[in-house]
Image 1 (cartoon, rainbow, N blue to C red):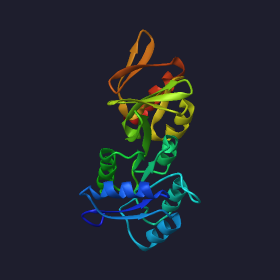
Image 2 (image 1 turned 90 degrees about the vertical axis):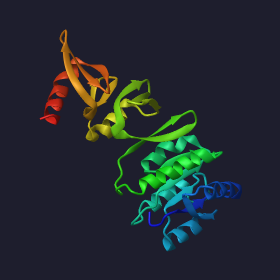
Image 3 (image 1 turned 135 degrees about the horizontal axis):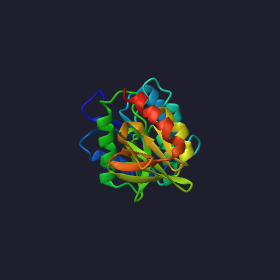
Image 4 (image 1 turned 180 degrees about the vertical axis):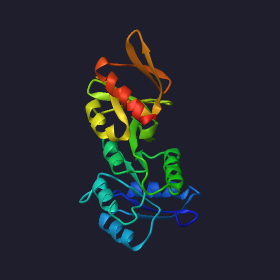
Length: 239
């Protein structure tokens, strides 16, 4: 961030939504200049001519929608941080894939918008290549947690439950998909219904011929099928 207060661009095809967002952001002392437009074409022109600290944009818009616009912005030499502001919950995972800073649901509450601004301000001091984050939903609010904070993942039918030391969250993603996507990040299967994050393993135990690991303070049983592979992995990762 190149100035003391944020310069933000708002993009929404509905003027009342633009007016409300402009008003709420104008009340935040961390925000300096707010430029609003209801045209994606105008937004692209402005973004090519000027530098912004963040872009707040809707998803459902005529022509190029918000997700497609975010893909275009991601190809900029210095992509601006993006906050999606939308009435549709179902696009949160797509937003995560595009490395959005936050995902705010309409109608927008001032305190929720303030949280998005905080994420932008704090993120301004981070390296450009930020750690992958996972979008989770609870009580109608979508939040982003760091994947490295996930201790283990448990299958629940066609969904999964991810666990951190602070709680758990339900994901609409099968365990097999997460195993494939997160394997390179150190997540391994120890049971047909469990993945663990190797960096969170604090102990390994053998009791009554069964192998178990302690992950995030919780003891998890390892199936006989996966025991030898896990032992080898833990040995290699802890020389």
